[in-house]
Amino acid sequence: MKYGRYEIIKELGRGAMGVVYQAHDPRIDRPVALKVLRPDRVTTEDFVQRFLKEARAIGRLSHANIVTVYDVGQDHETIYIAMEFLEGRPLNEVVREKPLAVKDVINIGLQVAKALDYAHARGIIHRDIKPSNVILDDRGRIKITDFGIARIEDPEVTRQTQAGEILGTPVYMSPEQVMGKTVDGRSDLYSLGIILYELTTGRRPFSGKNIAVIFRAIIQDIPPEPQTADGNLSPGFASLIMKSLAKEPEKRFQSGRQMADELKVCLERKNNVDVPQSGRPEKKGRLLWIGVILLMLAVGGGGFYYFKSRQPMQDQPPIEPPSVEQTTMETPAGNAPAASVSVPLPAEDSAKSEIPEVEIQDKAVAGGEKTTTPGLSTGPEKQSTDKKKEVLALLKIDSVPTSAQVFINDAFKGKTPANLTLPLGKYEVLVTLRGYYEWEAGIDLDHPGETPLYVRLVAEE
Image 1 (tube, rainbow, N blue to C red):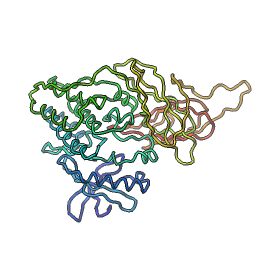
Image 2: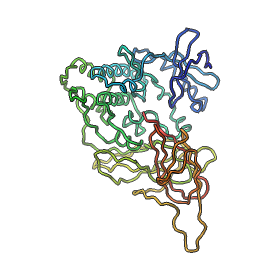
Image 3: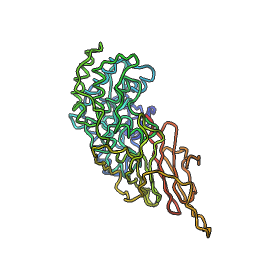
Image 4: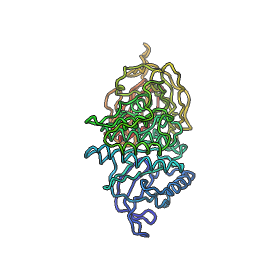
């Protein structure tokens, strides 16, 4: 099999954007990593031209810690990127075998920060810094992969093509990224801080069973200060990590160079000498409202009236906040009208915060029903004494990936794709698949006939 002049040797992995192969370039006689975009990504000629233009710009990056892009091309309807083939392993695989020494963690952070500073100075934002995108070789040198791919994606194309997707990996996303705000290089530095926290402590600062729990924690929780198992982490390095995780970008490092300079000091003081740092994020402050944070596409004539976390937030009592309506994604052509979603949000502090408005797509419908207490009914309301015939609805559930388990009101109903005949009423829908975050929502089947529901599950990192 070939794409352009590149001969495919074997598949290396799959991701949200496409498939990565080990290939051979016969013109120069060298191995390359060939990333082939999924066909459903190539939707319009405008997207193709934007992609090629941005990929060429990324190809001009030349840094020792950034994977080199050799070529970008198109073979009929297939777009591919030829990149440097690396001999090494991603960080997430390395740390599975054994924890890294603090000195090695600082050194990795220093290299990543320098690479990010170089790219940011040239207007390129990564947007998906995570352990699997950082390759470590046997000499301790790192290379950042997939650089700029997330930036290449056009927001308009994203809204039109893929339901319930976001740019980034949930547990490594910055608060501004979660809330759909414009991001800059400080968002990448936040993600680097998450990596340093995880490599140092062996756990992530924010985690959860589903996306809503993770996003809520990212927006409003302050994680415990990092510490190693032996309790000997330098206070200076711990403070550096906490500064990089500040909720407000203005309180973080303002450039990769700033962060690299302080990491270099920590590396030089590797004997746990405390170095004064420039502050940590305050534990007090207003709670930020979660705007549109659902990683889902719920389409159909029924109205989604809440999105429930199946796991309470740590160290916080249950709250019953107000709900904010969210518009849903575009339905496939010919299907029933789109539904509306409302999300339970954290209670507001005395300092009022404006709810961020994030448009997920351009064909949403306004409306939907506000509820402050998500209640469920097991079917339609009682009919009058004349015993009218029960009215039914057809709920058609599909997912990507398929073969996910479907539960209605905690009762197993089969695997996707599934066609379920239900009486009119409100139901709790849960879609689960091993290796992916759970998807859960309340749906109101308020009209007879067909209601399609399309769910895109998000893989756990």
